[in-house]
Length: 41
Image (cartoon, rainbow, N blue to C red; front, top):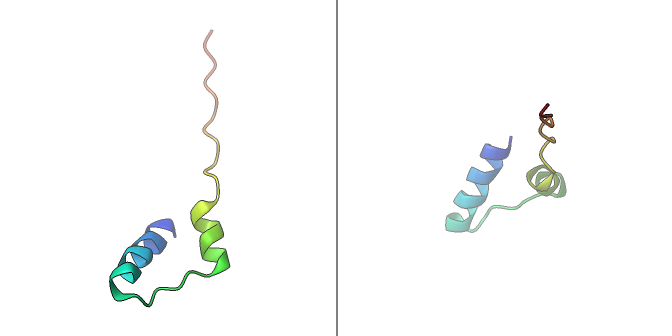
C-alpha cells in the first residue's frame, strides 16, 4: 500500500489535486515492524 500512496503523493504534487486522508497518513508514517534481533554468541 505504501508504494501506491507514495506514487499518489508524487503525482498529486504535479496535478495539485491529491488529498491524503488521515488513515493514509497513518499508513505512510506507521513504524516499520522491528527487525528480529540477531544474537551473537
